[in-house]
Amino acid sequence: MLNVKEELATGINFALNEDQKMLQQLARDFAAKEIMPKAEEYDRSGEFPMDIMHKAREVGLVNLNIPEEYGGLGASVL
Image 1 (tube, one colour):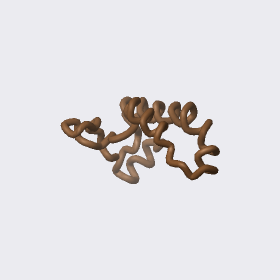
Image 2 (cartoon, one colour; image 1 turned 60 degrees about the vertical axis):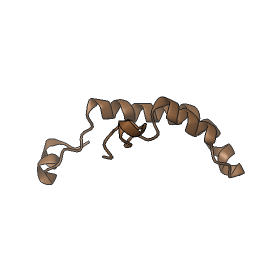
Image 3 (cartoon, helix red, strand yellow; image 1 turned 30 degrees about the vertical axis):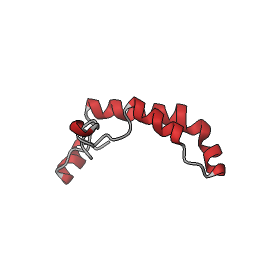
């Protein structure tokens, strides 16, 4: 995380807001619970993990930056 001196040097605040922090934690938890236990299996088989993609969509990790009127969450790409 940037400190005040770094923020002044860049002119940009890269700190996450509370919503972004919650999304970051959701993604970390999802990866630990759903992806990591099966990653080696999918790597060996070369199969696309469609079951994991469906679960990711259910918890809101897919289509984040798609506008809400088109079924996304309307989140910023940044």
